[in-house]
Image (tube, rainbow, N blue to C red; front, side, top):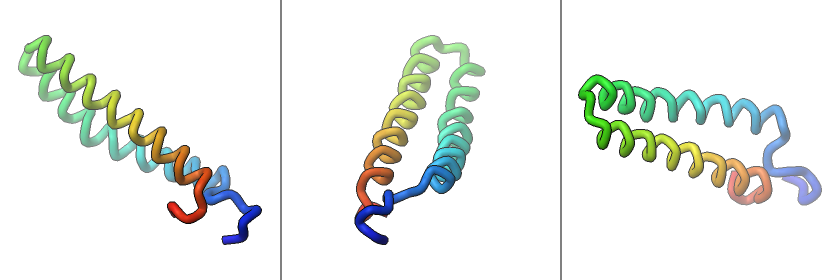
Length: 72
């Protein structure tokens, strides 16, 4: 990839973001549903935090890949 070309163009970044969001929702969303069924507020809170961390990590990852051609 040329040095002047971003690591990931906007359309590829958008596709990556959609795939990552789907992955997070399938994994963490399912955990949240299970914890909601248990009725434990503590478990729901912990599961919600895990989902938030997964989302935050994906944002950091997207930022790093978008800026660093070597990371792709």
